[in-house]
Image (cartoon, rainbow, N blue to C red; front, top):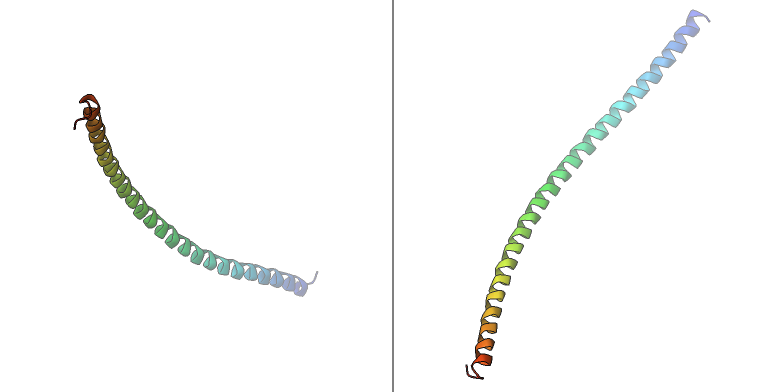
Length: 91
């Protein structure tokens, strides 16, 4: 192999490596952009989950309060009916 052929072979190999590096750099930039988008989406999702959890806790608190009020009213109704029955139909 002549020195010129060797030089051409080395030059071709270096060009191939340079092309791979350029493609790799482009792909890395694309990955960085995708990573940034995903990080923002994850952050928004976490915020939404926290807000949803807060709404859920508030809803559960309201439901407990409503159930407690219903239970108190039901107990009062049971007591009234019980007094009517035990009292011979008088309120």
